[in-house]
Length: 457
Image (cartoon, rainbow, N blue to C red; front, side, top):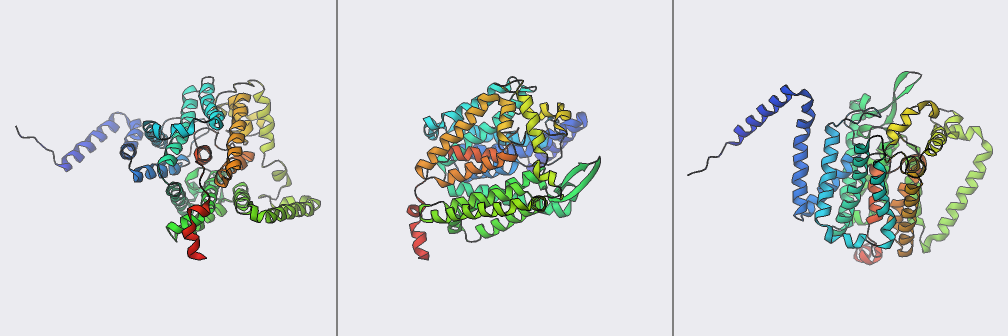
């Protein structure tokens, strides 16, 4: 008996009619229907990556970085309904975790070492504390998002050249920045940072783009600049235009966000990365001395100096770290109620809005990574995090791995005034943490790229 094949047009028409029927019967299902093509595309990439196709794995790296901080609609702090963007992120996190676990034999041996024990325990503790959260399901998903990034980074670094991986990371951030800059001019209500003051809504001149906020946008652009600064020589060897064009776009986005912390992070990390070598140690000593002298000269200026770095011209803005000191005080008091387990990982988004009066205004996280972990995972989580940073950092120092130290510094510096990679769902700092703890030590750069250096000698 001969088979019967349907014409592709017939299949498309049938699919369209089925979609219309679903939407007509249940209008809320339109979100799931809209997410279906993207989820199918992610599934195809995951299947290709499972079959060890490097381009598919790099495409998943691109998707992971691009979608982690992407916001396609503004949501309230406590709005945790499943929509298109959540479904898409869940599809990516599930795909990358599945790919990593299916090829666990290729990377798990390198991960199970004594120096990695603290952060492995930290990841496990996030799931343990999710059980005491006000929303255990949401907390578990948030913990899974970080675990998925760590597992996938371990797999990617074990199977693909790191320069190819970081190229995909930078490409994703550049595309993200380009889209955001276009929205800044085309759709100001969405592309610019919106804030409320005295019950009045204002659209600022700060770029927020599809990152949801100016600080998130600045953090993402800053991470791209840090990576491109670390591997500028290797990336330039691969493509002469990649570094200057990528750096220009990301720098433009960073400046447009007016995110002072992110700008400072780029300067400090790349400055330390390129100066702190044995041959140039005297430059580092000079730079530190110059900074101390400058600080001594600025401090007597008092109020006038503070007004220069204040966006509003208010001294209180700088002295209180833009209101963060009030948050820190309130969070420290709240954490005393549950000192060991905290309120459950990612629960700050539910807990802090309930204590708006104590804080003084509405916020969803502690704006400090240690206080955030203290509030949500207790002293156990804080201890495991600090041990993780120390163990990975000491290993990098012993091996002379400046790249790992630079990426780890990005997580820590952002954690001074933000909750870094452990807020709720994974963000770019979560990916930075995953890369720092799973990045294998590399041989000396001059040993790998000696032919490249000879070409310019």
